[in-house]
Image 1 (cartoon, rainbow, N blue to C red):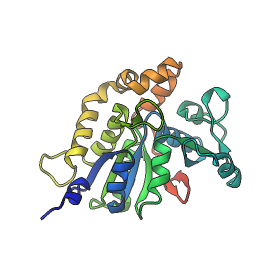
Image 2: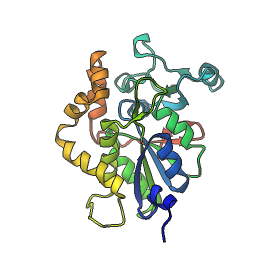
Image 3: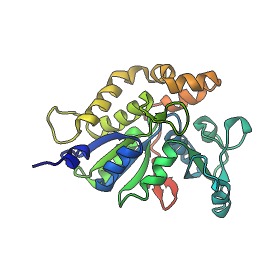
Image 4: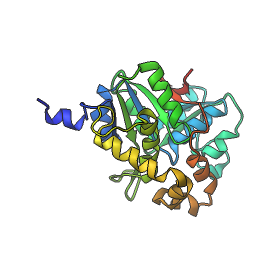
Length: 257
């Protein structure tokens, strides 16, 4: 007999999907792996920074002590892209100097990652379109086919950074790409993907031939395009272009071996 808690935890399934901090709190304590997906742009930025040879320390958005946190760890604090230093821009992070330690706050993805590390023993990974199949391969290689995976879409916020959660199509597609790689057959009625995970998987499979156009047309993509940052959309829409996967070890995303 299942309970309401079992239902919201999607506990009958190996691969699970939910949104934001509430979804994270429901799923993370019962997962072997938590994959944070914030395609535009946190988890893509983490992946890009690691691709260039740096590491990333996630931190909650608008924290008054972020500068002190960075200084204490010998890191540089990311700021707005227009300032010219490290920022949430994955395009810029791909070409930066190697061996940097970057504190990367964001209102959604970084806050999720920072929180996930405090919710239980699950290994916390940064997933995006760029490394979707690599994430799945690491999970299967380390945990085997029985490893429970909670994929968490970061989403955006209505109105302000503190407004209610707005599910974001780009994170649905990024999560779906990872879930499609984890469960290539997608057998109906099978034990792998929960209905929530299957829906994200199906959305990705539908959009796969036109990922850049889908991200550009999204609300988040429109916001980046208004700022002239089409390059970040393109960098974020690139699918399976790297084997680099970031894992949160202590307070730092480092490349998984």
